Length: 247
Image (cartoon, rainbow, N blue to C red; front, side, top):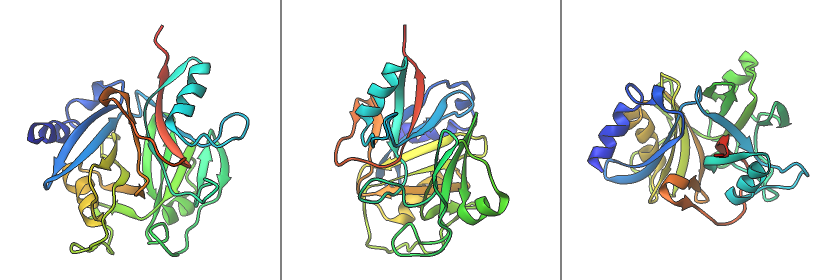
C-alpha cells in the first residue's frame, strides 16, 4: 500500500502526461484503503451516460458497454456520477453531448447535495474541470458534458467548511478531483469514511485544489484492469472513459 501511495503521489508530475488510458490502483491514506483512477482528459475521452438511444435509463455499466460495443467502442473505466431521483433523473445540472437535460440548482437545501458550496464536473474536449456551482453560473461556463453534485470536497485548496473531523457519519463514498496539470482523479473508498477523511484524500494525497463529492452508499466502480464491475441497484448519471474496440 505504501509503495502504491508513493506511485500515485508522483503520477501528476511524472507519469500521467504519457498515459493514454485510465489507470486504476489501490491506495492507502491515513490507514484507509481507496481505489483511485487517474484519467488524462487530453489523451482519453471522458463522457457522461444516462439514457440509451431509445431514451431508456442505462442504469449499469454492462448496458453502457453493450451500447458502446454496437458502435465499435468499449468502456475502459466508469463510476456513478451524481445524485438522482427515484426515476434516476439527475437532481441538479446534467448535460450530455451538449444537450442540457436539467438545469443547475444553486440554492441551499436538505441533504448532501444542498450543503453549499456544491459544484459540478464539466467535461469539454480534452479537459475536465470541477467548478463551484455559483461560479459556473456567473461565468456562463460551456460544457459538452456536466453533472452536478454536492458538497464540494475541496475548494481553492481548502476543505469544505462544514466538514467535522469528529463526524460519525460514515459511508462508502466516491468523488472526483482535478490536479493542477489537468489530471482527473476518480476515487472510491473501500470502507466507510467521513467527509473530512474523504476530502483530505483529495487535498493532501492527490493534490487536487478542486474536488467534488459524487455520492455515497450506492458508490460503484467499473475498472476492468482490476477485474472490477460493481453491481447493485440501477444508477442515474455515470461517467466513463471510452476507447475504440481492439481490432
